[in-house]
Length: 554
Ligand code: DGJ
Image 1 (tube, protein in one colour):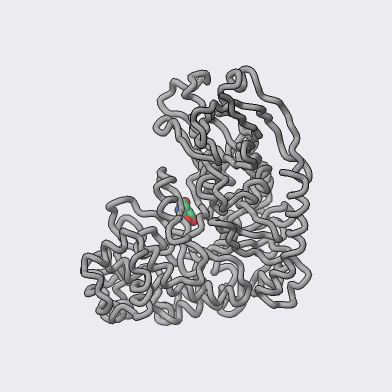
Image 2 (cartoon, rainbow, N blue to C red):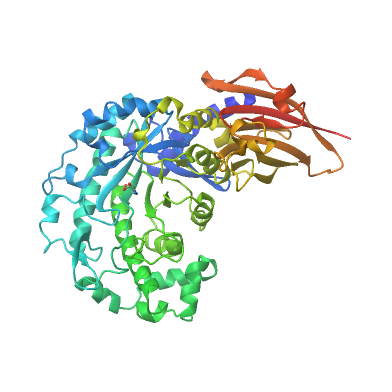
């Protein structure tokens, strides 16, 4: 980055925050401090701003029970640090913070937040409140044992399950008060430090084992007309609804009033829409009350559905899924975004679906497999995601050599360059393997053809049946200047504005960003490393940052 623009960035980073914060929140308690964590638009992209700077979550989610004692977490902190994470996604259990009604105990949470701060890690707290993977296993005993006051869902055979019904005001009020107390406490104890940067409200909400709740309260609501609030939303957004949903509504003739079955037809699709509406309203009330205390960004996550699978039977019905996005946006205006949890392989398919309707992409869970390093780079490069986090990251047996840690290291170094150029059509990402060996895209006046490095046939494993995934982020920083961070790719170029011109490589440097983001060259790459000027390349087993310049000749 040029010196002058760095200075300007620095000045704006210190000048805008205090002013912007006072404008936005008008609360004296924070005056003179950094702005609180929030989302902000830059061009087409939504950025997460932490302490006045755009932040990329290079995260890892903990296994469900790890964050429940200081002792258990002690050996985990160094694992997270070794993998170059800047954020840990960690649950906060309703049962632990409110063991008796109205009596809150935040001691453990406070200690863990302090530990995270001492380790220079940010936290995304996961509120395991009314629902955790559909179930209500984290509700406190005084809720679980009082079914009359805190009613459960019933399936179509009238059997109750350990799932709080979203149709009960008592359930909502109990969850909401706990969440409110939690947010108040975080504001009081972390309002200046901003160790906690975002909240996931509930976890993988959805209805099992039937597509809808058949409890008395649910049945009554199901017989009523579709609420006017939802009908009005659908009417005014009719032309822009996601096609899967529009198709369902269209099949019953886009009726604008009537019962659920009159408007959307009879069948599991309607049961699911009905649940999605009441789940989203419930989650929205929790979020809204929490934000009134302390307005951190708040999102909900979804267990994905396999194509053609049945709601309530093979996946939790009514969660924040792509085909229900419009319902969730209508019922959950206070919820900042909907996020996918990845336990299926097809990242591109789901990310394409989750980036509709202006939804910013954040990936809070991905199976911790050997694709995560490449996918972290791809999601940040191609979708300009807020961040990425594999699940159960503390299970790494070899954090020093974890590809994810190596990838996070280079992304972390490049973060100021990435975030400066987000939303401006200057960033791309690639994800390549044996099935998808190459991709072509435009950067400025150039066409980049990016291939998996094994396609050259030099590397030892290139004859294997499967290829390790390659992933990289590209940033255009000048007309002819670019950075790449990643692994396993080689690139050739064409001039798009004047195809009769050849494109040559003027200079390729491998380097790193040191203190104050100074670019330090480690190697000047040429000769065999650029195939004598024919391409720019990073081997699959190395994770590097390259800066290169192109030029044109007749
Ligand atoms: C998705 C959930 O959100 C996580 O909490 C965890 O249960 C994983 N599934 C699988 O273990």
